[in-house]
Length: 75
Image (tube, rainbow, N blue to C red; front, side, top):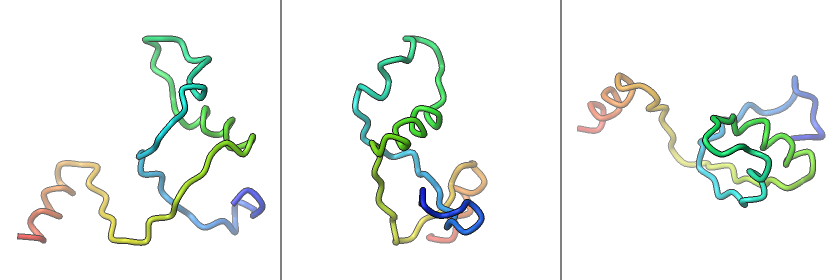
């Protein structure tokens, strides 16, 4: 995606599932909340990040209401 302009890039969602090398966090202070995205962007600029596009079913269950709706649809 790095070679595409942002306007032409496919919009994807990061699911939050990952395996991270401890070096990604080497400059992070212990017990200090830190956002993951800036760390990943630095690693991406160094071609140190890879990913897989999941093509199966996916549902946003980020709220109790959405989870309840999905559960109801599958009862």
